[in-house]
Length: 261
Image (cartoon, rainbow, N blue to C red; front, side, top):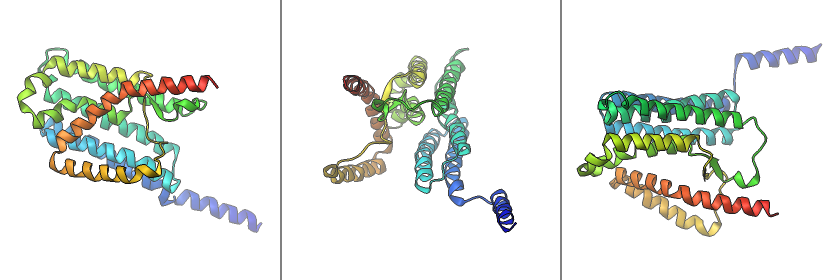
């Protein structure tokens, strides 16, 4: 009888309270969602720098929430679904509205179509990601790769022309053109839904002899972010784009090695 009463008491405690370690990752995810929605607000009021900063803030919190969940062992299915919804708003809707307000708003009839394409591509990518969680584990050679371009990287590529325009306004006639922005959104949408392998650092292990050089690079990166933020972020985004063909080559090499075993 005492055991039954104790079990009932534990059940009541579970229903009336929840551990903070399970809430903490969701708080970080909500901060990412707030940053994404705030970016939309700044895009509507034509405050481009603030809109871009909010998207990068959302990317920062998006990278942080998973690590907080793993560190506190607070991963939940609710948190995973909330994270996908936050990603859709912050990296699918916010960049599309930013590009529309910045360039495509006066493209007759078709400007909004390309923005919808970006949002639909993001929704399809996140839906595929969620379904893949329930499937069988992928082969070993996939462990250092994403399937397609991840959501934050896709958003960064989409808003790259806006970042470049802050430091190089003289080339606005190229990067702000309807043709350039529309083509860019089509390419980004394709990269998101494709099965192209792209580098993932989630399971990357750093050799001990590289720790000091990496720390120095981080310090150098921080100094560049402070002095030349938009140029630095633009170069980083361009470097990521250039890494895609390299990732495909490394993936094919790893796949061939795995199949030869």
